[in-house]
Image 1 (cartoon, one colour):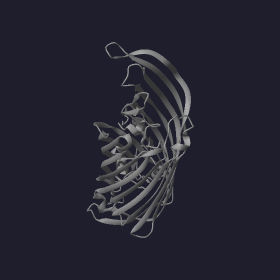
Image 2: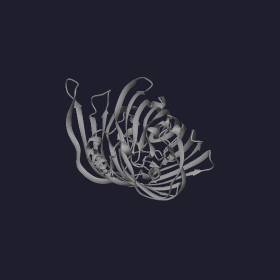
Image 3: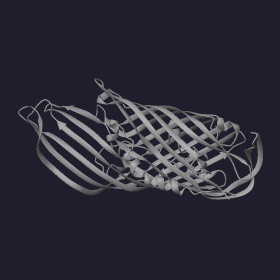
Image 4: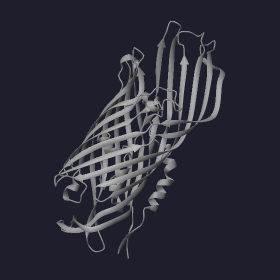
Length: 466
């Protein structure tokens, strides 16, 4: 008889590794991460990034995503996911430019089936030892519950930029820097009813910190003091995310998947330390600390993060080709008066993705690599002011591509049956453009390379015969 150890050891190793992963949270050099909580990361895995950010309608028994918790209901094996990324980019204005590099761990997740209730009437496919295909009668799902944990960056802050304002009174330069970010650990659950529908729920713990510094200088005079504003904030809170996934075969050639996820708005508790200091020039023309104007130590408060909604649909043809689209929205203007003193624009994004060979069933074509193409366009929550003083959103566009390389393992059960387990190595490349150089803005050109793996079942679960 064959039995499997529960994935408790993997779960314990995952929890033990959280402190190390937290210190390795991914970073950003984008000046547009200065707004709000920073550059938001809504859990896109390497595969989903290659599809332009398409996540809500992507379902498979070999992988799941964190943005739509209903996707975990479709898995039928134990899955471990992790990924890393590297970035190279350029920040440019009309008169100058600067290059930067980033690289870090991106995410880590574990998913496994908890309960499965089946009836035995479905015809399925297995492989004989001579590589021939044999049809057998296998169980059909009535009810199943899958669960998992995930660890990922929730948001990232970084980079520095300057703003210059010229008036008849004085010319002023605002030098802004930011660092830090928030981290999320999620407890994900998916309940699948029958073969085609899944409901999901995730509870996530969010914590982190940010340090924003603003230096106000007057380059044309030494008669006005220079001010430095240091703002350090610690965050913690809980988020709730609900999901729905439907995968319906229209006929033998075509199937349609539709997905929806909704993360409730959340209150994040804060502890804020703020220091405002003045500087003056010495006789040698060097800035030196003069006085501390204000100093507050760990003042408690809260901010509100807005809800996040995604909805998408995908069409698959003969297991060889799929195309999908998705819309995501996050209304940051709804929370301006809830602990924030910044101006925001509402975030919204359109994503489109194409997959060639989207194969997940045990046929010979499961050995074929999957190829991905994606495109997205978005309005960020970061803003700028046009010549008339109107608030305008920063626009982002991106193109992406990727490949998924299958890693197939042959497993023979105690009764001699042959089963195949499919893991995947994912590679994706992205080009992202944010902003323009007109009206005093900064343009960001970003090139990102991501590598991820999705390992299924017996890679890390020991088999025992008795």
